[in-house]
Length: 114
Image (cartoon, rainbow, N blue to C red; front, side):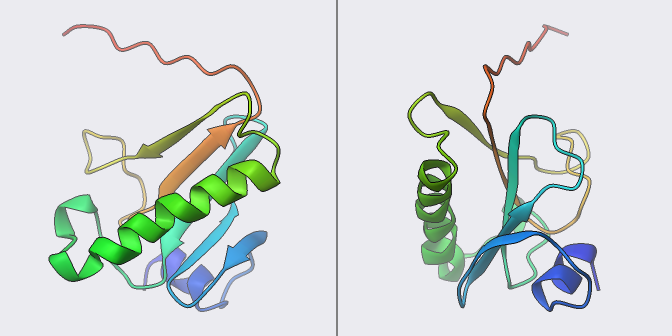
C-alpha cells in the first residue's frame, strides 16, 4: 500500500485540512512555499495516465476543493499554483495522483529549452 493510501486510511498521521467521501487534502511535509497542500483521491490511482471516464467527476471535484482551500487559506486573491506531476520525467515521486496547491508567495518556474 502506498503512503498516500495509508494517509487516506488514517494508518499514518497527516495534517488533514479537508476530507470527504472522495478526496482528502493535507499539508505537504516538505513544503516548497508557505502554502503547500496535497489533494488526493481516496481511491488509489497511480497517475493521471491511469484515470478512467469513471474518475472524471472525482478529478473535477479535486479542483473545486482546491479553489475552496485556496480561499480558506487566504491565498486565492493574490494567486496560487495547481500542479499535477505525471511519471518519472514529470517529477512524480509518489505513485498515487495528487494535486499540489502551492501559494502564499510569488511563484516562478523557469523552464529551459533542451
